[in-house]
Image (cartoon, rainbow over all chains, first blue to last red; front, top):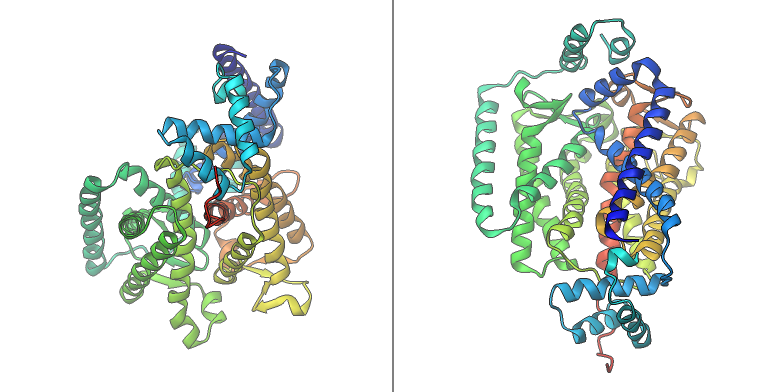
Length: 135
Length: 359
């Protein structure tokens, strides 16, 4: 899936999420929806919005991932490989040496040398893809 | 007029807005009149905050975002604990929501940034030593500040809180809650600072059980501090360790939250912090809120009068539970979750093998 289609999937999933959330809220609160939201925001000093925003984002994430399944690429990586590759990519962006990366993964992360070497080779195989495009 | 009456009234939009302001200002009446001493105190706090921010801006990056993190978490904390201890007499200009004050939130934000700045000077960032030192440092400042507020008559305790403690207990209470509040507030701040500091987290193969023990003890202390807000009944006698705090309920809560953090780390460990937090939150809020609703319906969780008095009257349709119960569960998670995540993070980022493996 290329960058443009990923962006449009995100926008599409956003509007689907918004529609579902509004639909559910209208069923629950009917004509008083707008007033209820306004009173809730004012009566909680605006902080009542925080959980709503987080839950909306969660729902959006779920909808986005469901839609994304249709565009699934052939790249199948294990969770361990994804974790290690993400770490290696972040470290390389921060100019951390390969030795230090391996040292941290072994001594802090508890990974085996073979796991790390495997992740490196898988990543090199798909060098064209960055994190976002792989996962 | 109550918020519920306002929602169901047939007012025109303009009258509705006027009614909204009226409800916000007058629904909860308490002593807001500030004495000249308190006004001077407030001016001092504002000037101190301003000077601190200017000084710290030269020494720390993204200082305004850091300060805002501190302000946000303490404001949430004030809202959550308003029925236990609150701030009065600060003047009508000082309040954001009922007894939640922006001035107190602002100064706490500054204290938190100072605690972070000094601990980072002494210890390496995001280490256990740094974490413990910043909690102790903030606890001392918080305790002195609490004493100052009590002596000025700003800090007041609810009747339930006063009843729960003996004379000695209530004298020692500010020391205890200063430490516990600092623990949770620093955890929230440090957790979100990971993003600001662009700290790269080493993925770990397995989280250890010791982090669960630390999380359980932290949550237990939080429940002890906030025990006067809600009554727990119907649990076995042996499980009540102090007043109405049931160790079974605390254990259940700790398991749910710790498990959600560990599972998300296991399966979505490669996500960025923000995305992970949304999933941690989503996975924890469902069982926590359902458990709360179930216990309320069974009469095993009864909110104290002071807490109920702060309710706006808005009900969640279908389950007929006040919206504040849902907000309370979410605020509880917003405070407790970063603590659990940060403790799990600190515990997992330690060097497990002292001897270097041959690479």
